[in-house]
Amino acid sequence: MIILKLPEEVQHWALNTKRRGQRIAFVPTMGALHEGHLSLLREGRRLGDKLAMSIFVNPLQFGPAEDFEKYPRDEPGDLKKAQTCGVDVIFAPSAKDIYPGGFQTAVAVQQLSMPLCGAGRPGHFQGVATVVLKLFNIVQPDIALFGEKDYQQLKVIQKMVRDLNLPIQIKPMPIVREKDGLAMSSRNTHLSPEERKAALAIPTALQKAKGLATAGETDPKTILNAVVATLTESKKIAIDYVSLCDPETLEELKVLQRPALLAIACFVGKTRLIDNCLLK
Ligand code: PAF
Image (cartoon, rainbow, N blue to C red):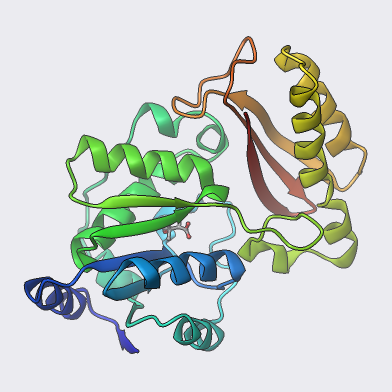
């Protein structure tokens, strides 16, 4: 496994790899790797001749009052985990190599970036799309893997790839959960033991909604009320949004048509967690 810091070194490696006719699989990350990331890496290992991963906590996708400084970082741990998954190249750039002085270009996937997380985190998806396009141009992947936990991010990236004719296959990967149902997230490490317990209301609320939908409930309000009631049973949870929306456009549904995406974002203490499921 080699670790490269400079964009031009990675681009050089990528172009040589492709010249040899080898397929590059790519997993972009912000580090603090957990089983969710590792599932992407294992699948990337299977799909590509070469497997590249990036570790870069992207300042552009954090708002001024958000947790950029506090975002968990564990480079030595990440390198060990990456090695066990057979990563060939790690790209771990500095912020000034990604955004040199005078950087002024942005990628905006307009409508898809507006609802859900976009509403409370203006500029977030522009920051994500901009860095992911840069990473794609540097790493030159044939296939890139993204987790469905960040569902809106996945949709934004898929749209960017289609809209800009990028010759890259995007492979969505299922949410990986802890044994008790909490979706894996780097931010889970911020939870106190009490908050960790309270956070279980999120997967419980998703299960409740699935149960109602399976029993034939078609009124989004009934489902959303049940979700909100489950989440707010705990005083430690403050809801950012709960939405039942179209899984492609992310527009709110007035009537439950299937499949529908149920998306939740809430603060457990100071930690913002997101989760979702499809109601089929
Ligand atoms: O999902 C993430 O970890 C980040 O948003 C990504 C895709 C690596 C871009 O910074």
